[in-house]
Length: 139
Ligand code: TYC
Image (cartoon, rainbow, N blue to C red; front, side, top):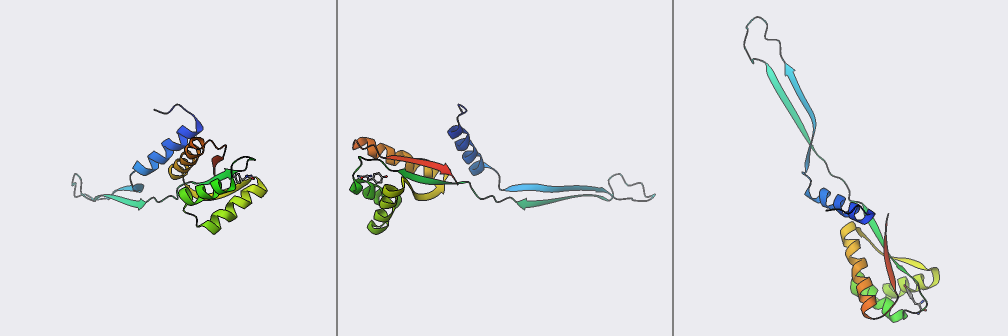
């Protein structure tokens, strides 16, 4: 059950989207055709149901690394390679961007993938006693 935090609500939404039926009824038209004086009970009754497949792009989230004065540069590039599938050159570029600007983007993902990455990086940093911070924000 949701405890009502922003994070819980976003997770509920993501789950609902995943489990929602794919079709959505847009029009249900029922037409009573005049059957003149023939007196037929249900003669000329038509039910037309048109169904449109409702496709909706999922909300996307940026995963960001924050700079600090303590975490070694090599640790950050390792994190970018291990959890964000970056090659060493790209990992180094992102790490230096964070080092110089205070914050930088590691990738853009759906809510549940972004949340998993943040948790993985935070757990890994804590395990290695580094203060590195990883956050997510809605695009
Ligand atoms: N500023 C850190 C240093 O000089 C390196 C660093 C880069 C730390 C990026 C965190 O997200 C970070 N050792």
